Structure formats: C-alpha cells, structure tokens
Image (cartoon, rainbow, N blue to C red; front, side):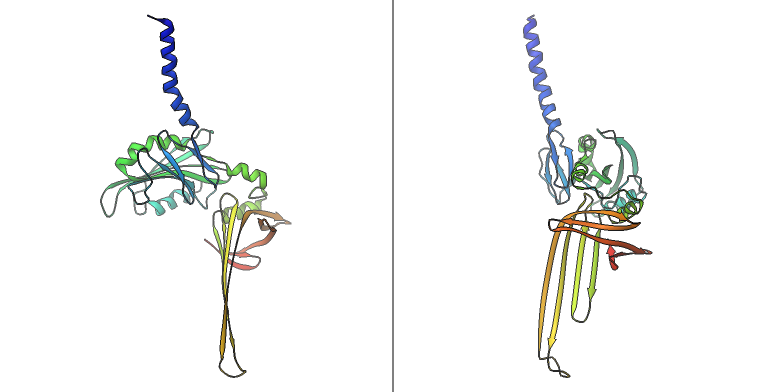
Amino acid sequence: MCTACAHSDMRLLAASVLLPILLAAQARHTHTNGLSVAVPAGWTAQDGPNGILLVPPGTSFDPNGEEIYAVGFMEGYSSLADPKLARDIQQGIASGTAAGRQGAFQDAAGRAGKWLQWQFNHPQTGVPVTVQVYLTSAGGAVFGVTAIGATRLVARNLPAIERAATTMAYGGQQARSASGSVSDGAAASQAWLQRLRGRQLIQMSSSQYHTSKKVLTLNADGTFTFWSNSLASINVGEYGQAPSASAMSANRGAADGRWRVITRGGQAYLELKTREGVAHYELSSEGAATYLDGVRTYVQ
C-alpha cells in the first residue's frame, strides 16, 4: 500500500467533504433592518419587506405556495417572558387551533431561546399544517424564524430551520451603540419603551374646513418613518350669502430617522432625530390614552 498515496487521498477527501461545509457555514444573509442568519447549505435567502425569506433547495419563493420560512421581528415585544407572546402568535398565525407545544433551545451565542409549535388541518382543504416558531432576543428586541406550511414539507425542512435558528443575530444592537440607544435606561423611559416600541402612533384631527392624519412608525430597530396628509377647503362668497366659489388644497409630508425615549427631570420624552435636527415630544397618559405634547395619540 502506498502510504503517501493514502495520505494524499485523505487530504483530497477532507478537502472535498469539509470545504463545502465550511463555505456553507460562512454563508450569512443580513437584512437592512439588522437581522442576520446563516443560510442552510443548499438554501437561498432574499430580503422581504420586513425580514429574511429562506428558500429550500430546488425551489423558489412563492407567497401562495405550500411552505414559507421567514426570519423577522416580533413587533411590540422586548422579552421572551412576555405572557402575551405565544397567545398573540397563535391568534395571528394559527387562530382557533389547540394550545400547541413549546420548548427551549440555545443559540450559538449562548442565549436562551424558545420554540412554539401548532399542528392542525387546513380549514378549507383539510391538509395537515405545521407552524413552528423559534424565538430569541437581543438588543431589547424579540425576533425569530417561522416555518409554516404543509406538514409533509415542513417536517422535511425543519432540521435545517432548527440549525438556522441557532445562528440568528441582530446587528442593529451594534448600530445603535454607534448612533445612540433607544432608551437612556431611566425607569420612566423603559416603561414608555415597552409601550411604544414596534408600534404606530397616529394623530387625527378634523374641523369644518380641515382634516389631517399623521402616522409615526417606531420600528423595533430604533428607526422611524413618518408621513402626514392634510386637506383644507375654503368657501368664498359675499357676507350673508351662499358661497360663490370654493378652494381646496392638499399637503403631504414624510420623514425618517432614528428615535429613542429619554427622561429629563422625571418627565419622559420621545426624541426624533433626522438629517435636519433633533425634536423632543413630551409623553403623557391618562389611563389607556396616550398623549404626545398634549395631543391625543392612538397607539397601534
């Protein structure tokens, strides 16, 4: 037997076996919102509007297909311990099903994670369906990978999704360290953070001649978007007579930037930072009602 040849064959075998594994381990996809995940070998990844879509080998993403695998934020939550988390997921994804199952896992960074599973028959087709969600948290945000689809397909791909779940990371935490965190850590700030993070703040007003709507979206990663619409109408005529002419104008505005909650002198403020500068708005509440600079604001 040629010892040198045997060693050479072993090196070639190691290269042919290990190199694809190492390359696959390095394949990582990062969304613009800061979420990232190691893409399973043979799978592909693409950005969705709010997260990462993972596509099994030999397939292409189809929003109306039999299976979907996606990584994204659980908006409005900052802790896995929130008792509403599992209930809200069930209502949103698997409404009307049994209580389901849950368990724990640990990701590659050593963080404790939680998995949730529901199995039921599709109400229209009767096809067995599985919904499985792997959740973890970092930087004050909860995020996870969701597998939903026909049980026969999800069961086949679940091992790859389980491995991907252990590699999820949120780069937004580092980004916020460079440009300011979403809270100054004060107790009042943290309380408002729980109330506002991942939500939309809506203000509406109307009168005989004017209507307006403002929508501020406070994303979980510390960014915000804002838009507003207003409509004004004026009737022109002689005093005491019916109007002889009318005029109408519409205005639209938009902005984006970063947000955080700070406390000064015991008072909490919402801070919005854009390219044009920084603005602060006083936060207050009466019962369940929220006010921004004294203006009633609906939180959704």
